[in-house]
Image (cartoon, rainbow over all chains, first blue to last red; front, side, top):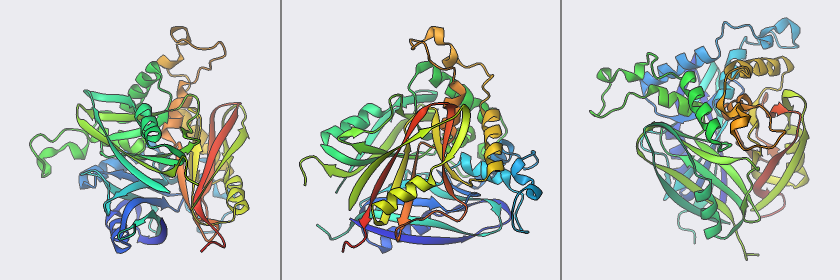
Length: 150
Length: 150
Length: 150
């Protein structure tokens, strides 16, 4: 049983944007010749998140609209009273982004079978930037058996 | 440390329906004599999902109503403009189902202790069909130690 | 590869309250000298839940308000018709608490790297009581390699 870690860097754009990170996860599995096991995907920020769903461009727009209605940026939030908090000068106004992140997921675990990520046909691993632009990181950790081991 | 995989098939009904898959997970653990470890439960579709909660018939109805209000089928969604997408003829109108799936969970990991699923008293593992009827699959993966091993 | 289990007890207060359980998780990792691996955090009740986000006191208040709007206690829920269910006398009126729990998470898996929980700078593991006060439990399970092993 091997444990292998990797930190993936993602440069994001303004506001909400959704990145398909499935290719990076597949590369990580195949470059380590993992045959059987699982990969943990972990979002390392409080205004980013994960979901596994369809990477269809019009659906991704629907998702943005849905999240913006669910936690509107225009609402009154206590977290946005920066003058009442001890924060750096560049602290963003982003309570809505935290709430969106909590409605999505921070950790996902995906099975690896016969060297392949066992996703369904239409599933992609999506990384959500909810308060961009920023430099972000996603943590990947494989727990698995390598090919050729008995 | 053993890794054991199983694909569970579920035939679902029209619209939204919720299936208690706890018995299948318990059978999988006991039939493999797993003593200690964890089971990963993974929903393999973009319009199905998981949650761990109480399997009480009236609560399950409340959950359906709640999800339908959260992401109403009647709303205008870009994903539903099938004429603007390259899709098969039987492509369903189901943006709302994708949104509901994203509010629930794709992967859950549950501890196994002394050969038992370490769920709380009222917890069941619930599989959500959000765009039925279909033939669906849920992936189960045990990572654990078998009884009798030292 | 070691599997180590721990049940953490939490006494909660009235209504919705949020507990930062990161210190207990860090203690569990360091007291077992785990070098590399992961920790599974599992909420064992149907009206408690987990999220990983910022432990900022004003944000926690925003989150409570957000959850109360998402699943208002005052709504009509079938689960609350106690006279139509076979329940003990002290059964609480808490459909809204179940719905909130389902919008959050039951299981989170967090990487451990070089003996440290690999959380981002602002991330804390938050335990949500959604129908307190009660005595609750959270299950922790480490899967990892101890320091000093080869």
